Image (cartoon, rainbow, N blue to C red; front, top):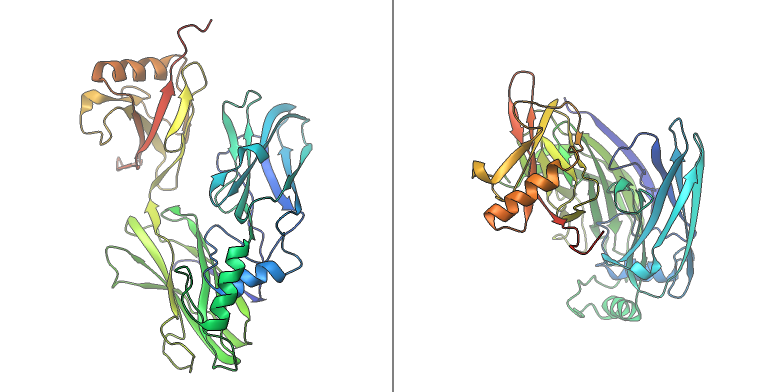
Length: 424
């Protein structure tokens, strides 16, 4: 049986995501990202603001950061190794997925063995929108990423614009569509109205046998209390939408008007699960036993989750290496124990003369990372690009089990920036 853990929280719960490294490096770890001003919504990258009450809460809640405020960011980097280390620490600020490079922090720190470096960075909140805060650890020249914040480890907060506030007020007052945004009915002693505020699933690229973390916010947007609420959480392969599997049936005894309940679930995907793309579907009142203001808003779906046996980590898609820099390939797998990578100019790896293996020949490696020998990758790759008249490279990983069974990962793109001819 798949493992299942259910944790139930009361009204509007904010859970800080766990912070860990997406790229494991011996001895270095991102301990935490802490903000001086936080807000109950959003608490993850998939949190949405398509209901007026969520917009207005972000403005009226005294704990939420406001336009023009100062936000203090603190992160801790631990050196758990046996010797001192010098690293470059970068704090990245994004608003609506666009990086604000003028606000980022970059500095080199020396950390003694067993010690921590606490990095403080203050920013002025001059932009409205959804902020994302993440951390990277680099080498001292800021050319190679050593440790990265995992998906789900970032911190988020929202600052509504005056236009956002006006749209939300108009929607609540009139119940009409404004600027294409969704409407909810005014709360004037109406019946209860259960709807899903948001659904967040991590990781978005999962391995068979890996644990999925689900966070779902259920809201009573009506004008009366509602009792004995049942929800049904399922997942399915997008190519087989009729074959749904139940993950959980969480319940709650009572919800007041405007109350938000957060469900946190953990689900371990079966080892024999069919590979491909999946979605989570959440249904409240699946048997339609409750009388509600609206009966057509009780179902929501997550973004698509990719399920595979091998997950590529570094270089990320469209990554750029420097010809005279360091080259590092990293991936993850639970089902396979031996690996080799393939690099080439054929995006489908169909022409055997357009790609090569690392390590070469019949050799395989047990590690989940590979550092090519000095001159091996740029020399072979750039020679292949010249002979095939291409300027784009692709890489993938082949996994092998002791039984001889093999699997192939997805494909990422990367480039190599050649050394300038006038460099010395």
